[in-house]
Image (cartoon, rainbow, N blue to C red; front, side):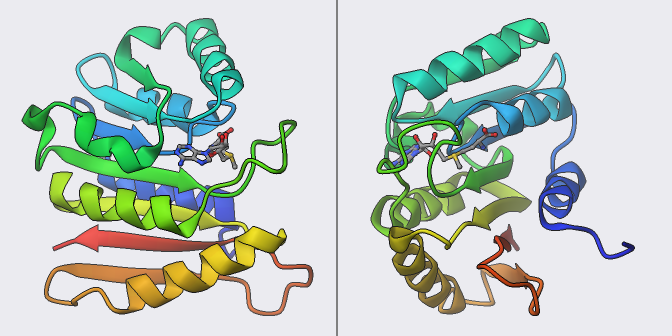
Length: 189
Ligand code: SAM
């Protein structure tokens, strides 16, 4: 298939935005795949902040980072991403990439899911921290019950962001069955 699939496309967007030495944020660390990806993008001179509310996710991410010898590039925070404003103010306008992989932890408790309230609060805080041309990538899973509400709230929210401030992209396969995930990307102007 020549059209890039959802998860590879999310990574392409992040790769285009995040360079060595940058600051990046994984808002939903989970099992740490995206945190590791960002740690490799920022390199030895950059830094990644990773959030997750579940101790199990923080542990899994820490283990993955250690196995790949990049744990020094990452600060993991067991807090809701709606507390992104806890991060040092020195990173303001220095964050070039952030990723949200919404839904529940694969292999974990399916009742612990992201919600539109905290996701939108985190996006608003991130928009303040982003550098010009910094990108927020959201991968939206809407197969589970709460995911539909989060999807609808997020679509309403991003469609109303001012085009003078941000570019908003939706990337979605329109004829796939069973609620396939899709991407919303927000680039600060
Ligand atoms: N990107 C992850 C990976 O590479 O493995 C998968 C993330 S998983 C789909 C979603 C994660 O979001 C879960 O681990 C869940 O605990 C976390 N989560 C749910 N609500 C959250 C919140 N308010 N703040 C931060 N993380 C949250």
